[in-house]
Length: 321
Image (cartoon, rainbow, N blue to C red; front, side, top):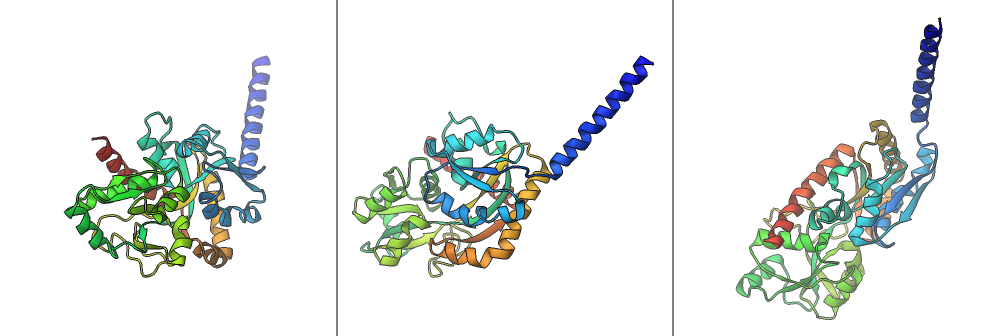
């Protein structure tokens, strides 16, 4: 009789647990969601904020941006990789901290596989820019000069082994040229160095170069994306110029690996509803920064990151040879 009573009690407990678990999952989110931005305020958060600040309307909970910069994004991204896979702690980033940093730094203890993509929101774009006083007006002219005078051309980026550095290195491998890299700590110092004539060229995100291009002090030679940017319709892509270099910069959010699919889908659906309701308004605001709307679902975002891993993996290998 006692055994039967215990068995019945266990069955009731398990049923209650299963029911409560289902209810908890159905209620997600039951509290605010934190999105860790692994960089200083400025570029990355500006690309994500137009979506994140509106998602509460469809989630019923606030989405808060928390800044944890340092180590090229590794501190913030690493903290998310080690967080509970419950959907309440996410990372908002470009491919830099998720793909590039783990490839370039062996001391980083996470990889792309430690994250579950949710959605990409925007395409920021990267470009090769030169001073308006430069004699180069096209990529062909730049490549010809680089081949005629190897190692003479200098370029800068926002940091050694960062995404802008490795994009340029990937291009030199593709074009068969050699440039000398002079890194700076951040996009702003890199652009300042270019304007001051300390380097010949910069590999840069579009946003830091935007104002100077509009002012006529810098000129873009090409963008790295699959298609031309709406903000720069006259600037060709490297891909259309014959180089196997289709590398758009998608900014999005990811959860720790192991986050339940239904949680991932709930967050993605909220982003999708933001896009449907506010997409045109967001696109106008992003255009000011030289960016554009590009919503990717979890699978599309995952495939994009896999492509980035292959691209930057080759660039890192060439630098380590």
